[in-house]
Length: 420
Image (cartoon, rainbow, N blue to C red; front, side, top):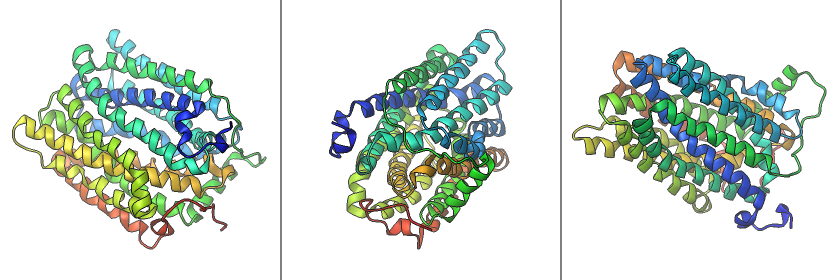
């Protein structure tokens, strides 16, 4: 039986989806370890300042500025799987260089910046290829279910990954803990290589890359759904990265929490993401896809204020950190899952990787700026005050959805890419 004849609840029985799901789940789990270990290397081993930590976070997201061109190049390749495999293997090698430098006593902030940029470039290539890979893997009526399952796994990784990462950092040191993430990318590459499928449609025009890239950006900015989604997501990402760049530093230095406690607080808080992932689909049916996206756009950025007000005994501060993570993680799933599904439904097949790249160039490309602004503000007005600026500014994102077709969308059935 082919995927196209399976029911919407049959992804549990779809071997190809399960294979990719396992690759994604293991890789996401490893990512959570590195997301905690990398800034801890900078803060605890290299004595980085708030601005330097901000620059490190910016370096991770800097390659997204090239997403448009990477996505345009990817769109010209019919089979996206080899690109995804190459991206995974590249990240394996890059991450393994960190413990090697540590053992040779050569570890520096400069190396962290270089690895962050190169690994981020591989991440961009993987994601732009994934946009087309996803619609070839599952049918339209399975978009919400597939995104919910993948997001649920990501949420579970946020529950267990930081806790495990914190313990590994304490027991083995942060550079050694990163070895675990490197191995997860190897597993992901092996699993994706096992998936046999008919590739989605590709861009077969003979136009130069730059012209095709411009066409992708023009398509995105003229699209009645995508341009509003882009403006909202970009605003959320800018203000979210202001706080994300400093959150580990804030928890370590100002709240005076240990690496293990920080990891456990993040892990407990991430349960909100799992709850949001399993709730997003039924909530979309109850309240509508668009209204749920709007609600998530308000609650997600505002949740960091809970952590910013944390004070008192250690257990109170750890609880506030976990609560901020819980509320934010729940809300971001209610934003991302219906938003990603809506985007998949209204984008033409031949433009997917190009549009994904153009979208990421702006949406994720703003993240380095947010991280740098966060680092500079943290040095200027203090880390706690900067978190409150992040929370207040993020609330503006929902204004982009007012009057848009996005917020009026109740369900995805029958929704087709518009002609414009």
